[in-house]
Image (cartoon, rainbow, N blue to C red):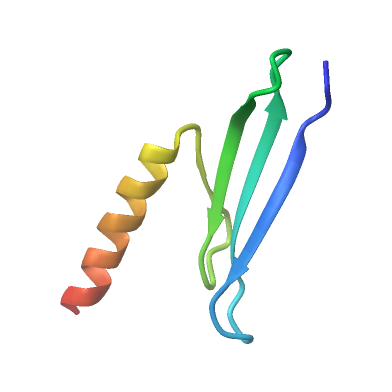
Length: 70
């Protein structure tokens, strides 16, 4: 098996520590298989870990909706 590859996306202003870490591998046919998505927003001690993209989007929509209402 091929070891997992990691893609890190940092976003936000310089003083924030927001990032998305995607661990993925390739199947024997060459397709990309996402194994884990970790989202760490500003000042979170532990990242939120998701198995599917849909779960991550649902979490982010809920989190952003709460922020915009305040």
